[in-house]
Length: 450
Image (cartoon, rainbow, N blue to C red; front, side, top):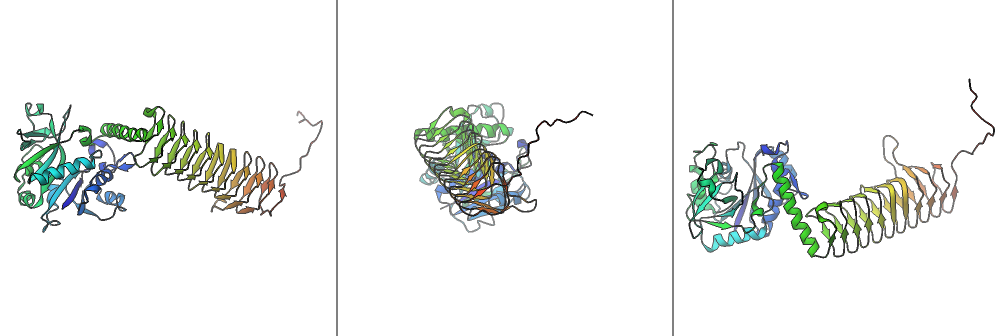
């Protein structure tokens, strides 16, 4: 049985941001959400997030995560002080406590499982995660004997010049036998340069402590500033793109493509350069996306093509073509075999199957039937200055170039709208609508000079 505690109380001043550090985004999720996801496969009995700086904002950002507990550290006096706040909440607990920093977004669940197994098999009072960094600057150092038993832990700021030559660092991940730690916590002292209560001081007092090295040191890279956030993003992108290429996805020029970890792709998808896939996006087999496209929180079915376009919060059915230079937003639903072409914007609109809007149109708050042709320059005037109104266009209807449909309005099936018409009233099935002034030609006319 294990309880997880995540340290998320700090401000993160080096981020130079009003946003708490743990809420900064990496690959579509906040840093602290990534840490929470890494512990989920461990099936912890409780998950506790220790909050402090802007605690209400941190809690609000995670309100949708079920069975999550929050403990507040009102004054941030170090990691040891943070864990002291758990004493009244774990008063009768006799199991293990796994402690992680909330800015450790690249840690893998498999690494944590190995750490817990080592902790149990060796009956350790504490087990800590360590790694050998090429450049350990800024990290606390760990000193062990030949059997990986920890002898000493020293924060970087408190290290001597000789101690800083040791590249084995503390990853900030600990597993304690809680009863042993609970006895030590009240007696921690702030005898250090920062006048803080370090959890590392407790590690050396609880009994036998063993270090477990992480094979890939990149897993334990913490985030303290924007440079480190960018480095973590590069590592995460490499992981994600390698995964999809091995699964049968073609990435043309992977270095110019970004893919959130939340995205799902099927085999034989092709992603062109300068394309970005974000959020809860799903792209099915045979689809060809890009170049130069953004797909966010959208579902694209088989054999969809998207070129130089933006698709957000929308659904596109099989065989449809989007772009170039189209914009789909606000719960758009495009049917099968459709074409949404050059400089067309769809907003909160449903297109039926085999419907085309080839160029230069805005269709908003509209339900469009099957086999409809939207002529160039067609506009649905959906806003009266106070409210948005709906438009309905029936099957096989065709709008002429430069038509304006003033909502609320319904066009029946098999309606033809003459070019240049402004339509303000409902139109029945099988009708031709001409709503424009008659052309007047005055020959031999020229503005007279004064």
